[in-house]
Amino acid sequence: MTNLTITRPDDWHLHLRDGEQMRAVLPHTAKQFARAIVMPNLRPPIVSVDQALAYRQRILAALPVALGSRFKPLMTLYLTDNTPVAEIIRAKESGVVHAVKLYPAGATTNSDAGVTDIIKCNAVLEAMEAQDLPLLVHGEVTDSDVDVFDREKVFIDRVLSPLTQRFPRLRIVFEHVTTHEAVQFVDESSHPIAATITAHHLLLNRNAIFQGGIRPHHYCLPVLKREIHRLALLNAATSGSPKFFLGTDSAPHSLSSKENACGCAGIFTAHAAIEFYAVAFEQAGALDRLESFASFHGADFYRLPRNQETITLQKKQWIVPQYFEFAGERLIPLYAGENLAWRMVL
Ligand code: NCD
Ligand code: ZN
Image (cartoon, rainbow, N blue to C red; front, side, top):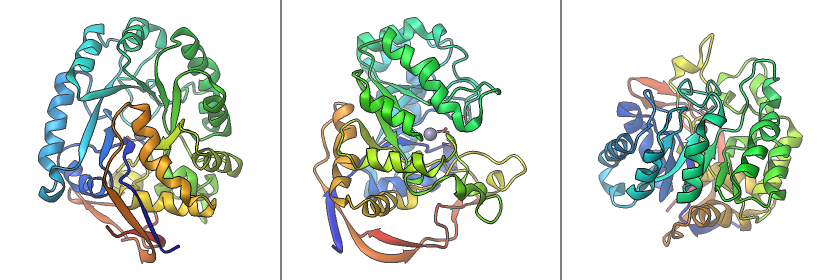
């Protein structure tokens, strides 16, 4: 097969940043995806509906004219220990806030204002359950005594599993799952829970972080895992199960903040997001399942209409640029300077 036409996909987990950085990365996403769930971990974080509305306006204003009427940012709120119940009601009424994101405090980039103990959010979670507003979770514990490769697995036992028992109707997205334990939990759960899977976790295992030296551009959170976990993710993504859908977690950081003695976590994939997924699905012999994973399952979970238009991918090698301009700095994309076998042509 040399051409593959699918319904235009959506990105259910995306970091757009703000200001000049946002203007640099937004066109990459808008040219491929119809909609994206925009993460709220700005500095300061998006904790109120008013902030989300203002951020949404900045995104809309930054869209290239040709894409302006087509791309829709779907906003989220950043959950804190002090999120008021009233903000949940407002979020639901707004029609533009589609979910609330739980970052355990200290788990990842800009998560200092995150939740210190989920018990503090009981009333808010009750309200979300009642309002049917989904909770998106960064599923890692932050305890320094838990091995960094085990933080997702431990989160399931300590936080996620009890949460599903306490709030049986709360819709949950387990974001960027990275382990076979997470896949298994989502697969076997009778709870209304789904998971996003990134392209980089489908393509790379943890060897990529240490390939011939330390590779900061392969460092993200949750950190890449062993090959057995990558295979479990690939299996889930290509299974046809509606519980798994596309979320790039494309997370741009400048070259200087990545190539640094204390480098930031995040991999930028928006420049070729759907192509990366096509490569992974082709490897698994499952290109026929790409459309439902990329374009149907997420929309169905969020109870939004499926997109009507299509995009076309062509099997045609091209070389990914070495870098992109990023607000006066450089942004190193995944596969910088390397061959990529698929390319979106329409
Ligand atoms: C994300 C970022 O840079 O905002 N980084 C990452 O490694 N994925 C935050 C996140 O989603 O954890
Ligand atoms: Zn993320």
